Image 1 (cartoon, helix red, strand yellow):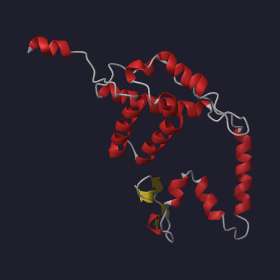
Image 2: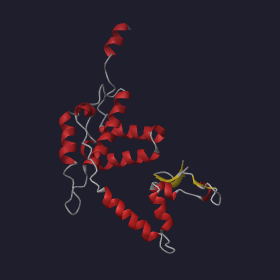
Image 3: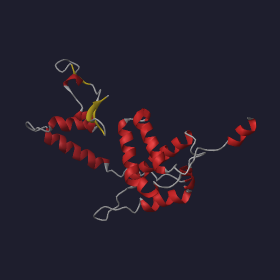
Image 4: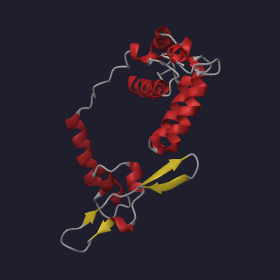
Length: 207
């Protein structure tokens, strides 16, 4: 029994059927079972279906090499263009795809399909520092606020909520129950839910 146990030590669960696609399908089920938020699970699914599986989905996990990932992120994805010829995926988007693939491969390590994450040998696409002209943005913001607050502009409430820093889903998920003490001295807007979309239920409110 001891010899048998030692012979198995260090081995993985790899088989001819363990491809990137089959691994993703298992990881996707795990994500949708609650490992991540439903929104993140949906994003990961899009990243894989659109940008990862078409290129390496049929590859066995034990056949993946550093060169495969360098080619995927620095050539294949970097050279994707839209109809006008402009790059389809900026560095930020490629970085998000990288993080999704890395998460999937880390899951493979935890499940014993791989001894280590082969993507760790490849640097993630670099973060890009924002190039916003803050002074110009602030000036434009003040113009928008001044315009929507003139008269009875029907978009006033929508723009004011946007300037509070609420995400789109949070703004669309608001109900009257979120407004407290409106006629009092200390009115409050309490953000408790957001409007979300999931593949199963479609549009719905979630905490």
